[in-house]
Length: 518
Image 1 (cartoon, rainbow, N blue to C red):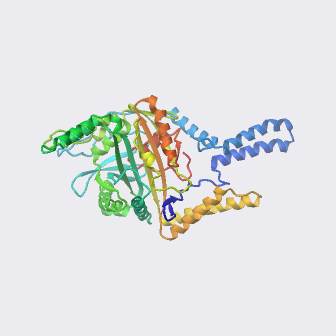
Image 2: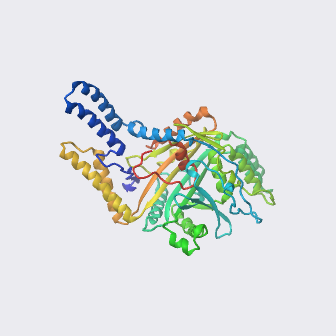
Image 3: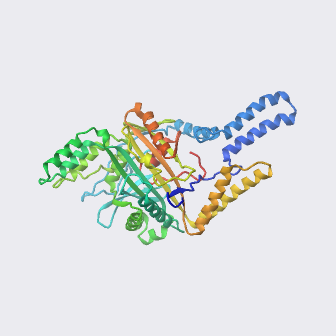
């Protein structure tokens, strides 16, 4: 991401990963092109006009399937996604039904390690390998640690606050962006233990009852009467006119990269949790330079509430009301939040274009970053609240070590240079897009040599409604807000359950493999 200009600061340089190996085509596109060539050559070799009449249309269809794009992907790529989706449906993997779970509570009212695997929580799809651990922080409080048994990562989640909702194109916003970029660059080091950084933002109509409960709990006897009346009038207004925003930051530690530190801390899950909790203080101070303040690190019950409300937005009202009661002086009931055993959805079902979970329906899209330079307010439209439903936006970062980044950029530059030279040798003019992508790769290589970092990142946005009839309307409104900022949204059809976990659940789920198309 580079800055341009002196007056209006803009950012550019977003580049889609190149997973191709032949003239910008990926593997399945190359297979279809080769099949089209073979189909056309067979009748020419056999000198059969009748075979040519049959083979020519078939070869044309294969070429169209490999080259013509529909909603960002060619039909050959859509076919690959459809085959994978059909295989999941045949195995019954598109349906999830939660099993009853019970969390063990110790005598000191703290979460104990489950003695039976049936005591663990039950999450759908790509979240199923997550295991919940609890560690003590420096303030002797409980912090939730998510252990991914397949990726071998440990993740903590923080609730964060910032000065304003949307980044605006002014000096303060640009300083915050530079501070965030500098902190991300610090994570791009050799043998860096931080393998994934994810930011999540939720915007939804606020619950008036929850706000009223908070106001009642914080009402002071000496408060002026007109002020109390004014607050009551505001809280009695239409709920749709009030918006609530929540932001979260997740940090994932790689067990393989930090194995020496984990071993020195005692090894196993306890050692990994100790290493991660030690880093929490430096992480909080590091993101502060970007104007992001860590409000608190989520405990097991807090994280369970966040996951539960992502799948069942209607439950937020009850959970929020219980949280208000639990924070009142002298309260002797349950703590705020919910038991981790209740974190997951009751049931989910994934179709080709809609993700249905509990009492809600969701659409998920991948953010296609603009090719033209944009200012710091690029995501302002997506971060705005909607009166129709709940919006959830996430940006996932994976730092790349300098050596790996150098190899990746050299390979990328070589591929693009070879493609341009092959076109020139065959008498073709290289498209401006390929020349620009080569120039961007060369500029990134120069910035890497100057000490900057390189990251893989992707953005996802989900819109969730509790009325199925409003789903398309909410999607159209979201696309309109994205278009006003120069962003294009590509629906994650065929893999909505995984995309929803990336967009809405702050669990540090990773990015697709390099060159993998959604």
